Image 1: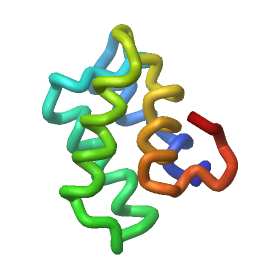
Image 2: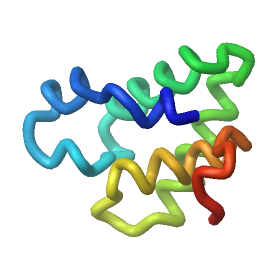
Image 3: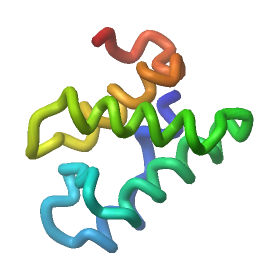
Length: 86
């Protein structure tokens, strides 16, 4: 799911600093990731994505590097296409 890892320009601009890190406690960031995932696969329920995000929030220490975090979420959702094994 390289599409999800690409084109985070609007996220970067909104966050301004520390945009290479994902914040689990910031609602707009969580919603942004949910939207990106659902744009690629609309069959995945929001609740399932939220659970995957919560699991990765617990398993990856802060600060959470965005790319590593997103790959963790994709792996939890079985969308990793061989991107990374956790």
